[in-house]
Length: 351
Image 1 (spheres, rainbow, N blue to C red):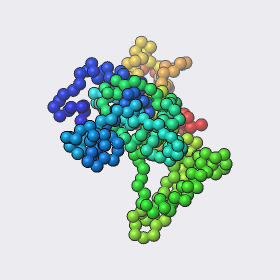
Image 2 (cartoon, one colour):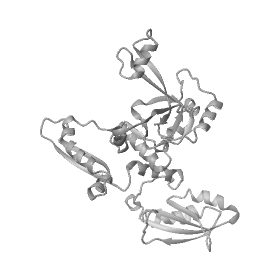
Image 3 (cartoon, rainbow, N blue to C red):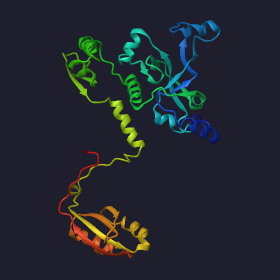
Image 4 (tube, helix red, strand yellow):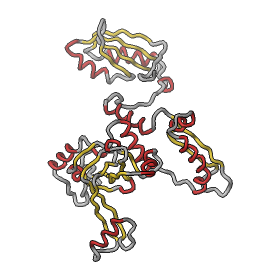
């Protein structure tokens, strides 16, 4: 479904979408809007939260199951930043969660990452979190009408918030006996966490603990649990945030497969130095880019105007490239061919 009302072909006005898109350009995951709003579907005949009870007291005539609207002080954006800033003509909705303040033991456990329901918002205070269990979908125009605050003021807190959201949605439901079996290990690790000791530093450096059952979790046979402790200098979410920043700054402009040319039968490699008519270099460039086997073309200073790297399966094919294809380009004045005897390379950033 491309837009908000694709069934009858209706679309919002271009002026409205442009205005909302402009207002949301600076919003990102983990940001906070005030005042907030929260909606859930509740059964007022069997109230489980105070909002259900209040809804029944306010309206006894409504049905048992109803949408219940709650005013909250603020909401935090749960949707990924790429979805937030994408035009509302294609993505009109965002997901938000109420902002809550925690205290006592719940605050300590949430701050330590032991309560997946809560994602920290350090830009608002050490005790402020997003309640991920109470996620609501709102339109982007609703979000645009809220006052904007930074819930996560730096890259690390943004990455931590994204990791918390991912953890909340991706947790695996282990059988109860696994919790009983691994509970003592979890308790020992929790006791040692954030302590200035070899054990504490080891626990703090863990990104995740993976458990795999052999033959499988629901087997009637005895199973073996193999553990994998993944250690890294930063979290997976931090790594994703750094990668996203490299894309944003256009340090990384794309990806490609590393192919062995010889495995494709291209055993001959040559550098072809070219001089071209100065007034027609653009035309020469465009035609040279169509030459069979051309992998690389560069403009150079010195005795030659351009250098091309060409690959061919054998000498006869290379001969045709140089003497037939390239010489047929009238803007090319003369060439010099250099055979490559061996190739070495090191990707940028490989250290």
